Length: 326
Figure (cartoon, one colour):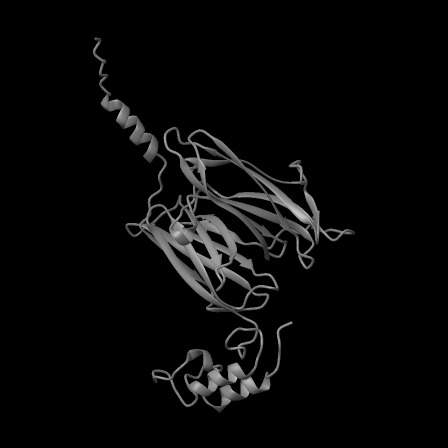
């Protein structure tokens, strides 16, 4: 009987595997994210900014993934922003990204009230390990309103393989006519769940028309990043939910942060249900006569910001009573 041969594995093999897994890593140990204001009214531009550091020093070649959700958990915005010079893709890259028709052929103009189609192909750069991939596409009209999000999460991308995600998003009838953009974020998983970017964000431009005339205006979408900081802005659509919104930001490795802001129609709509009614008066009445530090104090009931709830706050709600968001 022949004895099976046992082959020794060279230590160099393990070095190559380890090197292939850990090259091109951008480390960070602290991430901060915030908004320019605590509350934004209808039609306002939300401004998100923050910093990425390692050992107290700015990370000037990092990527930060940003996810925004409303109080129902619905996704409203997903971006990947650099903190300076974007690093090369890590293990997955965007091979192709374009706007197209329903057959996948390139198309650069869509009419309001119709579907816009997009196709993105991602490619594994990992020669060893299968990677879980989350892809999020975010649609913005020319004034920066986030008018659509499409995604696929947890797709298993085998080493050296490719995957094409083909999807459509409706162009709202009230979208602004002109040049629009769609961004593509490729992540390990959602920032909310500590996922991080694989590569810099993809972007494709197209035109939103109204069936008769279009404009050549560029999207009003600010986007900067330098010296370890990042900055982005967006607007919510007219039909967006009122109330608390949550921002989740993440970067490699173990760098995670969150923030929140309030989206309101009228300050007197205290419970953010789109109506000024008896429920709002009840909130005022419950906190009536209290001041900052008291057990019954409610900052939401202090409508004029004088650190006390009194007749002045009650008057504001009474003045707007029966108003309804349309």
